[in-house]
Image (cartoon, rainbow, N blue to C red; front, top):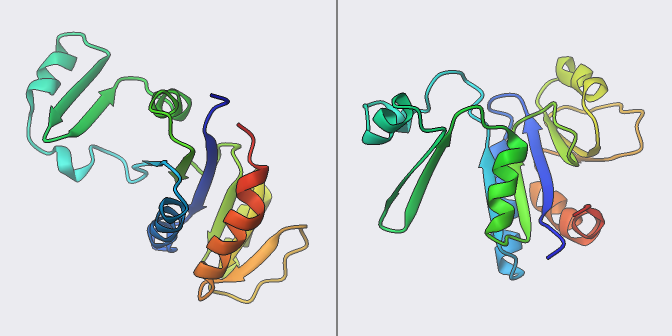
Length: 170
């Protein structure tokens, strides 16, 4: 297998990232693609689903560098000093066709950037490998990328699978 294709959806909180991810997953699954997702917990601290102490916490405290809990077909994996690249390697071992990453703005994978306000435009100068922008504001962008309004998410998804998906490196 050549490897999974990887694409990022980035933007500030409440910009529509999760909504777009859902549309991309539904469309890709409908095309017969096996899709994995990775979401960055960018708010700091432990995600809300991990509030109480678990046995896996005791395993980690005893020195385990990775722990997994399985139940009813769901596997929750936690790894110390994990990186996006290590998580991607795990996903590739599961033979997914496409890995959609929500967040991790500064990574250099191909991405779409969601912009809510004109003041957020500076983000476009800080990020690498931008393939498209989805914005709630009317933007003047001097870059060779596609721009969609936030009301055109379905149009972007169709554009993604028609133009970008095939171009993604493996």
